[in-house]
Amino acid sequence: MEKAAALCPDLIILDISLGDMTGLEVFRRARAAGRAAKVIFLTVHEDVDFVNAAFDIGASGYVVKSRIAEDLTRAINVVFNGGRFVSVISPSPLKPISRFFEAFYAKAALFLIAAASIGH
Image (cartoon, rainbow, N blue to C red):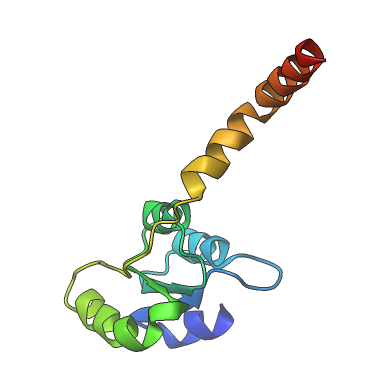
């Protein structure tokens, strides 16, 4: 962050997964300190929730590492020209199913226990 403050870049490419602090938090703090640089997040997270979180705090771009060769240069050009860029993210067919089970796991487990008890 000190380097970015000293250099006053127009664009910062920032990983979301950092050591002690997430890239999202680094960017939030930079914005709170008055830094006006645009940011493109570069990440392994192919998750719409991360994309939304990044853009909610003011990101200009979101590039997933699996598409870095195809997308990074294009993202930089789009952002420098005032646009926003998001890599194509493949939807996980298991994500809706996993969310269903997260929300209803306890009820489903009780139902299965009850059904097993009735069956014996």
